[in-house]
Length: 147
Image (cartoon, rainbow, N blue to C red; front, side, top):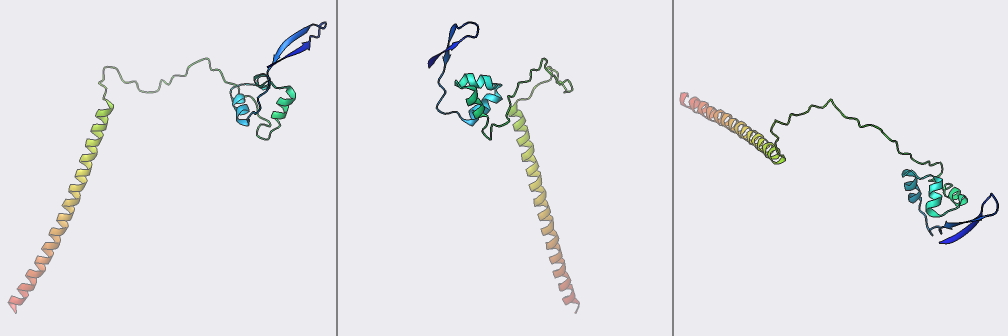
């Protein structure tokens, strides 16, 4: 850090001011973050110890050209959604483990029902096929006996 002495306009008194040495490297993302955090050009100048000409040069970069400070919007109230159904406290609450257990039980039952229905359908199809085969064989035997 160095000390810069400047002359005051009202009569030649000197006012010592601290001037920080600018960092060797400033990134575009740092400047973008500063703008997002509400720092204007004056604040950026002070933060990095730059001159106004250096700040102007920074904002001539293609990615920074035309960028402005993002000002935080202050909300003076809290918005509450009163359209949601509120569950009375007297209702018993179910734990997450119970919900998972119940869901897995229902899923297992559904899979079991699907498998048993599939097995039943397969058994029915095999029974019909067997009956058709036996009936055909019976008819063939009846025809041979009559001849």
